[in-house]
Length: 147
Length: 147
Ligand SMILES: [Mg+2]
Ligand SMILES: [Mg+2]
Image (tube, rainbow over all chains, first blue to last red; front, side, top):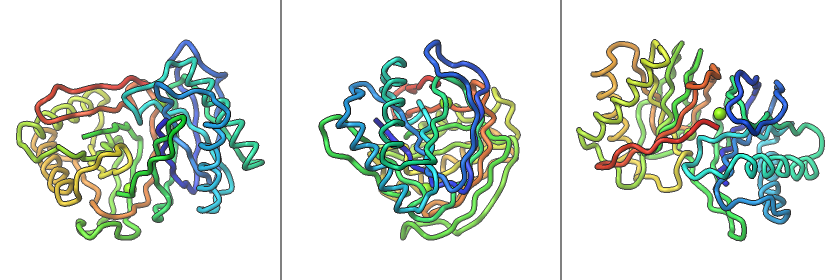
């Protein structure tokens, strides 16, 4: 799983067209002071509870560090060349969303899987406002540096 | 080199803090109807003229396909876990910028390398509005699918 965190003053999304046969109900949304979690589910990722609890722990830790008021799980296929199949990706994203909600509480959103979506993002630009991560089931996290 | 294209109705950027010792002059900017080219320069990438001409050719082809009026080269370290050293990355980005300008003409911008930057982005959301690519010197392009 590859993840890009962006701390956004504002983030909103709106499905435009279906991209996959396997997809969620279309829904728009918006959040302020949000940690946006762009997620590419990769081959080998599973909906394993311990794995997703660990990923969710990192998400929530990051959200607390930047004092975000909300978290948006945003399905994003463009962070990896080695993607999981859609039905796996959708399940992993749903369970990640549940795991983040159970740790963070209110203010957790998920954009729908399987659509081309318009979005609007205002990245705050402080040193912790953009970070990427790689997670693998059974391995410890690999972290990337800021640009 | 890993690249993420986003076709944006609007894109603007503003350096906030230095992130690296090797960095450009700080400068803000904005563009409308822009193909934003987020670029991670990877280990093994070089400022080879033929390589960067090929990458620039893909950038300009994409800009024409989506009828973008401008192109923004945006240094972005978060697309890869295997980054080039900063002095190489900066040279590659500068030469890529020159190569894109020579093929696209007016309306090409580059955000400064080496800063934490705030940015604002409105992604249009049509099927070609987000695409990622992987380029290696001496290899043909590997392409990723939409989510
Ligand atoms: Mg950055
Ligand atoms: Mg997408």
